[in-house]
Length: 185
Length: 52
Length: 65
Image 1 (spheres, rainbow over the protein chains, first blue to last red):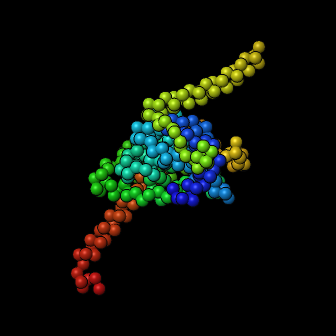
Image 2 (cartoon, rainbow over the protein chains, first blue to last red):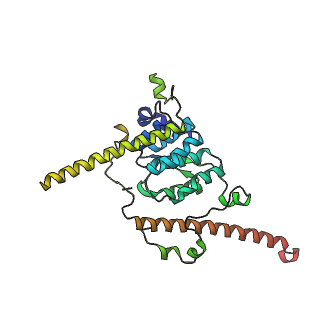
Image 3 (spheres, rainbow over the protein chains, first blue to last red):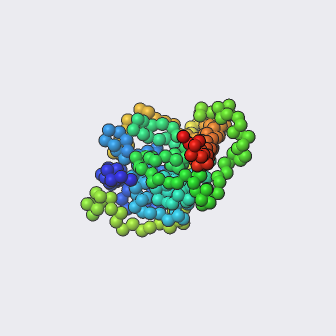
């Protein structure tokens, strides 16, 4: 997270009011109560979102892998924005192979998320959010550190190929995705 | 204390274990379910009143 | 509450899940397929690049001109 963004966070009312004396368990209350969308800073004043403030809080707390698993799995099933926060945090702090291993299971999570960008709110999905974290350079007003691609790590034999939950995709790919489209894409 | 608060210093916060985190998840979840049940109940009651 | 003082109802986006599970699953499946396709194309492009490098290496000086 860049310095100007961090400064905006610690200057924000949400930070001062909701992120003081908060531990790894208290974070859950804050997320459930206040995180209604993912995003970075927004508006003319570049106000930091509660999501971003709590991500910064996690950076300060430095939760262990055990705690992260609770956020991702058990808590993440119940509270989707808790999972979203945890995947974002993992992307910022863990090494590449762990990022892929921690995050990829949630490419199966099709739940809806609201994303707030400079231009407004739009609908996204957990799987799309996770995919963006794995492939993009910048998310939620934060520069993501440059990770080696999955293919690279497979070549180095640090990762096994990912198996899609769709199973054998050879057949599926023969038909164009457009033809399979049953939703609004 | 006020200035610590202003710069968002964490202060003396006891760290939570994974077990405590899970317990909190359950507690928050149950609280939400109770709240929802409360809503449904009042709706149910209203319907019952109407039926009478 | 000061931090959600926004014009909240201006552009509300509904993130309620399971309103239409079938359509939501189909939409997810499409996204997943697109990702698989994209990753696969990236690998193919990379392999082609390597082949091209290899091919150039094998050309004689004469052919290269």
